[in-house]
Image (cartoon, rainbow, N blue to C red; front, side, top):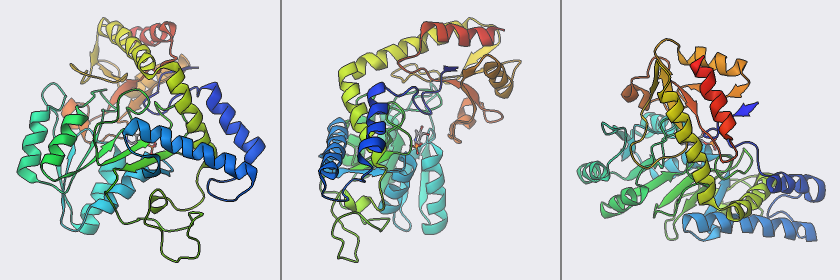
Amino acid sequence: MRYLDHAATSHPKPAPVLAAINEWFEAFGISADRGDSHQAVEVNQRVTAARRGLGELIGVPGERVAFHSGATESLNLALRAVLRPGDTVLTTAFEHSSVVRPLRALTEERGIVTEILPPDPDFGLAPARVVTALERLRPRLFVFTHASNVTGALFDARAFCEAARANETLSLLDVSQTAGLFDIDVGADLVAGSAHKGLHAPPGLGFLTARPGLELAPQKQGGTGSAVALADHPTTWPSAFEAGTPNTPAILGLAAALAWLVAEDRDQLAARALARTQDLEDRLAAIPGVRLVGTPTGPRTPVTSFVHDDLDPAELGAMFAAADIHVRTGFHCAPWIHGHLGTAAAGTVRISPGPAVSADDIAAAAAVVAG
Ligand SMILES: Cc1ncc(COP(=O)(O)O)c(C=O)c1O
């Protein structure tokens, strides 16, 4: 199989990541912060290394990194911790269901007001429009994705966070599409993300960070391996935002993935994936009937969406499957943006190359569409 769906999850995982996961099952089997044996100490050191490494990427100390089952859980917890009854929240039309749906639920539960920034005519988000919206609304929170998982547009998160701060608005940045490939140390108050995409760690792991000094009420209560005698959930990070047995093998996999990203050079990995994306778009643009959708004119990630005048995305999906190529069709869990892209009826075909994708994989994908 040729795998071209790295915006969903990266595949294959690097050998050191697989080795670290296996080692946990074969040699450790102990959960983080649970016990004092030599093996427990070793596990804890690796978990601490994962927190520290991720914290360095984001610009926060390791103890401000909380691990969850995925970006979805991290975003839910952050939104619930920040938004109070009647608050206004600013967000963008590019958001993933992991923001769209909790906001919808909080509208029902707490009467929050959600203001959605539509895209610019070129499907970007100019900082000036973000500034205007923040100045007009002065919302409690601005939650936004660093990049569109449908079009690949990469937003100026640093400018957005600065503008939020200037208006006394908290910023919650979703780095699921950018962590591991792009700079995510951009000054957000809260950062949520996925470990299994560009970071190349296993699925079932996400993270939330909060800048030092930003204290939020815990949203889940349970075992943390610390302060066990107390009935109240701890309020110090990371325990404040963690409860229950953690996914320790995945965290050890993340520690290995972070070391691998340094050794491989993150910029090189991103450049390889972007070069394949450009090659793909050049080939697709030359095929009669193909229309690239929302293709970024500025900074971008390695994600391409397209449609065909005579074949709907589901038909194209069947053609890719017949050629043993894994791509995605439909709405990609980003329901709002399709109304702007003109793809609300059936969505798009999305191809998202990773660093290991070959020129041959791209040629084979284009050949499927060319027929
Ligand atoms: C932009 C964005 N946010 C959030 C998520 C959810 O991530 P996770 O699978 O880790 O819950 C995804 C991935 O599906 C995504 O692309």
